[in-house]
Image 1 (tube, rainbow, N blue to C red):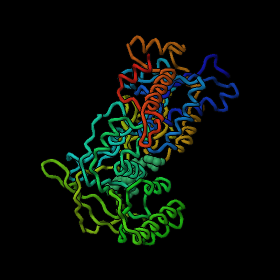
Image 2 (image 1 turned 135 degrees about the vertical axis):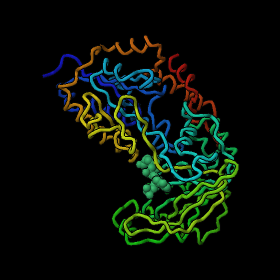
Image 3 (image 1 turned 180 degrees about the vertical axis):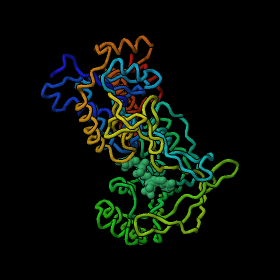
Image 4 (image 1 turned 90 degrees about the horizontal axis):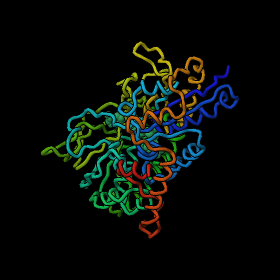
Length: 465
Ligand code: NAP
């Protein structure tokens, strides 16, 4: 039976996970066949939409940033509303949402750094990769200043975030002017005295978590040499098997071996170097007067099954900064079950579960906060489909909102004095950022495509103007 009113759904988070979930819901068979109508509002704690793509993807990755174009198109249709600058837990509670919506989908992602439990991890000069990413992506809640005074820098981890961080740290700032980085990021990177960035993987080249495109890209940085170490290229049976069975690992190992050969035959003359080390685990970040001065790594050997065994042999490197890119971690949300080991909302295939493991009616999760911070942006779509399918299957028991009227949520936000931003407001901010870009130039004198506005109040002011 078709309900007389639309099913009202709130999505918390306007990153790819949230927007894809909203889009998949509006395009579902049930909606298309007229069995159910939906009215979807997406909330975000930031004044601008797009979450991870705006504040997590590296600025020199225009292809991935281009996903914003696809999300833009979805939102431009006008059938999904956007309420930015509204923080779940402070501006709006679960009870408030339940009053206005029949179902709530949490798509809040993962922005914190996973913890590295080694001595020295808290020293001045030891940084979480996510914090640095938020700095160079001009996240409104992160400081404008970033201490870039190290000549030798370590990046721990062998995932794509490690590559992003190492690439941005080693690139010449002028080569980033073609991107949307704001002036303070350009100035910070321009003044950096860095000469050597060392990426450390605890396992071998056959166990890397990079992806081929991102690995190859390292070679494209101007005046940066890649340095590899022959002793790291030992392969046990498990590694040979991984190379044989995994096409990506196979391609990347060929790339690395080609680079190693090239390095033997060509003199390296660049002013900056990017070193790739394998089979070394961080044992201690060394400090003096509270500041990072070095890194102690333990040499590992492979155990035959893709794992590693520490050899008890230690190597010390002089380093003035260490970036920990060992994975992200989700943040707990008020009144929603949380698995503090995995950093995800407790859920069964996207249905949020309570303390006894039972599904909580009307609550759903999707994206990294549902399954953990792994996978490329595209994998968020299948994830959203699973969550939305369950939501639609549950729909007969939803329709519980006491105030389902379209304007009720705006009245609520206004009554609380919340300066929310809208999709129309995003267009204003978007135009403004593009005009800032057009008014400035990159290193070759070309106008820039965009310069990001960083200040939260300024973003709100422009959006609401
Ligand atoms: P990730 O791919 O899970 O990589 C984490 C790395 O940290 C792994 O190499 C892991 O080693 C290492 N690690 C974990 N704990 C460690 C420890 N205690 N000591 C030393 N190393 C440790 O995570 P990520 O790099 O944060 O990326 C998250 C997701 O975002 C991934 O799916 C990634 O592909 C995606 N992403 C994509 C792009 C892009 O497409 N350009 C950019 C950024 C991120 P083990 O393998 O041994 O556990």
